Amino acid sequence: MKSSVVLAGLAFLAGIFFSPIPRLSAQVPSGVDPQLMGQSGDGPVVVIGFANGSSIIATAERGLSGVVGLQAHQTVSLQLSFPANFAGQPIVAESLDGGILRANQPAATVNSDGSVNLTFEGGALPGLNRVALHAGGNISVLRFWVIDPRNSTTHPPLLSSTR
Image (cartoon, rainbow, N blue to C red; front, side, top):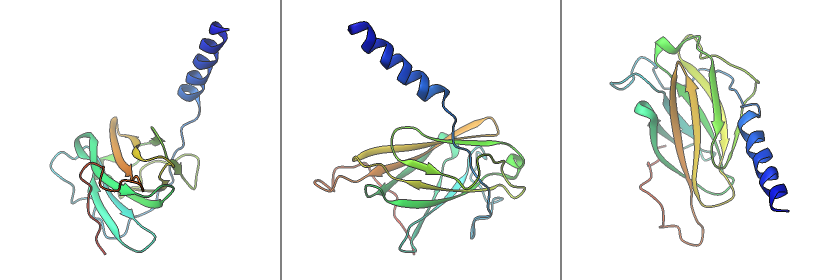
């Protein structure tokens, strides 16, 4: 019995590692100039758009973005703007530990202006939800925190939205 549980676990993990990874469609983000990147030039500027019209501009340079607060199952638009030298590079995105990543097309490359567009829905449970972006030989991670409705003050520092 114990060996069948171990085999089932291994089969589950193999399914995760070898399942197709969603890829992204590309569109031009409004209001972000891909040439105005930070110092490292190794990751995207991300405009995170909320249903109420507010947005947050974050950077995932040097690997990690700031943490963005979401409610359970809240959907946000992600408008990515990579440095110009990423143009034409294939991009792969994956939700690492909660949430649902959506794309309009099964495969994409970074547009000639460095832009890519996708949608993310936060997970059901409170805590960290990460989205990994693989492009141009670099990996950037967008970090979201699903707020606990029973204890809305227990979370890491969050980026603030603007209108």
